[in-house]
Length: 290
Figure (tube, rainbow, N blue to C red):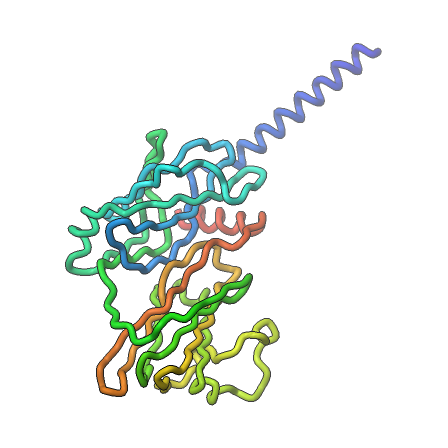
């Protein structure tokens, strides 16, 4: 009797192991999945870009290089397969890529480069052509600074950039330097002495009750900024955006002497903490796009 129970128990354990193994195999990604990246930035010799991707927890490969429509970037020497977040079957990883100065000089002379895909090479010889969001690379800033950066801060929800005007200014336009597909995930509020006069006396949303300023899409332009006056730019990324943003808010206008100016305020975010529901949304979106 004991012998029969032993074999029954052994069969049960073996069956459970097989079922669990098959289930785990069914959850494996066929290839790494890159998160959405909204990047619009100037690159030069020594410039680095950071990319984020999901892969299987047992994947020991490391990214060697990334090719962005002819502009190559190489992983820094200390890159490893260490995850920044781990799940039962997957891990979220990042890779820091240093852009090739020769490619920058030869590919960005006439105009910026924009691409939605990348060719990724791993150290085990694997090659992957994948969607990465939208990346725009520029060779130089088209700005003439009239705002002096004073400081900034960041929290779980909102970040702030603080500037002081170097001259009397008229700001005529603001633009978020990402495509419309990504703009819906970015909220910007502007606060200055002039903008404060535009406030609606009604209370603002409860989740923004401590954030001064007025929403960018409700701001009445132009606004006047006096020399020495402070300008505060608050911005937040929607928790429904599972990716990374490296871009700018561009401000344009004229000085008191009539000279046009263009300035930029950086917008930067890393992927928010992901949970299992987020993972399934990311994986499902990639599968639907294939």
